[in-house]
Amino acid sequence: MKIAVASEKDMVTQHFGHCENFNIFEVKEDQIVSHEILANPGHSPGFLPNYLYEKGVNVIISGGMGGNAVNLFNERGIEVITGASGSSEAAVKSYLQGQLKSSGSVCHEHQHRGECGH
Image (tube, rainbow, N blue to C red; front, top):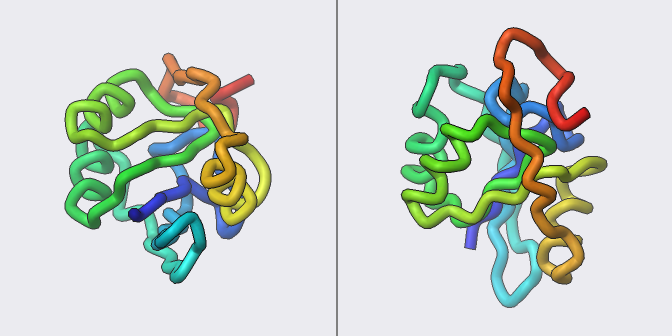
């Protein structure tokens, strides 16, 4: 399983589409076995869900995310977890332990940066 975390370096970002990078964790038997960092290739409507789907991502974790992105991920069978914060690795470990549940934090405005989820 691959879990992507929308991040600013190692920290979960509050707005998925405007993140600096994605921390991608490969998980086997509920253990992280590898970690790679992918730069955000750019934000345009509908692009990132397809991009991460093509990278084999099964779960996306973020602080907040627009409703269109949530729907596109759901259409591709990718689980969306919003409302996360803290370090990317800690968020993944919490998810694997069943402690991280989606808050349903959805961004409705896209003119801002860093204000979603508040």
